[in-house]
Length: 253
Image (cartoon, rainbow, N blue to C red; front, side, top):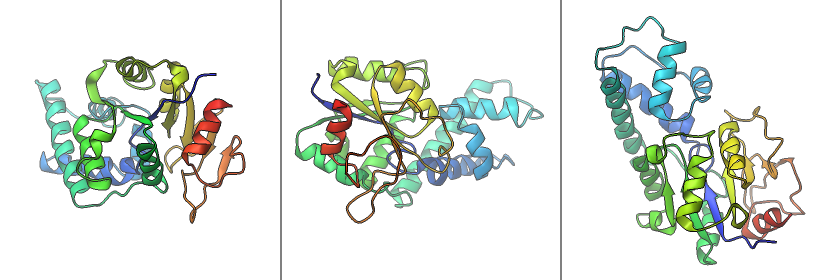
């Protein structure tokens, strides 16, 4: 039986509710700045989340929901510009402290750091967004706690493809049996499972109805001593919040 050597964290929806409270309003701010009358409300954004990647999400919106929009001649540059503006507004929201970490996230990361557990970020969001979240929640040097930041366009095929996890494992010189993934969505678990990783799911409002039947455990949140999680599927083995001891037990099960 392989010993757990690394924790691989998704970001959006897993570490913080960034989709609803960060990315969505940042997209709307970018649209307004560009003089567009587009508005992505919470319901529409939930549908757009079926596609991973911000630029991909803009394209999907125009293909399925706003088909009357006349695309400019330099459409690729138009999409890139909108996405760059959205990233600017997202980092601004983060700097203002608008998006806290989800319950139990900071405690688990701090415990893992204290015990010398290797950690990585594995996400489809941009590196700038990762930096903004970590620095404005865990502190200015916290990005250095993560051995690898696998983010953005570092691989061509985004989640649900397993490529980003495969890339991170390769960079860390690990096998899938050496690590465990933390995800929150169907696309996320398809990606981690495609890389043959055991996976812990913490759902959120957008993903609560996703199919997580292949997950090793499904929780409503990581939780802490004063704010216990609810187990939606799997065995928490007597624990009431996610700490490194429980993570190791799930990995070994």
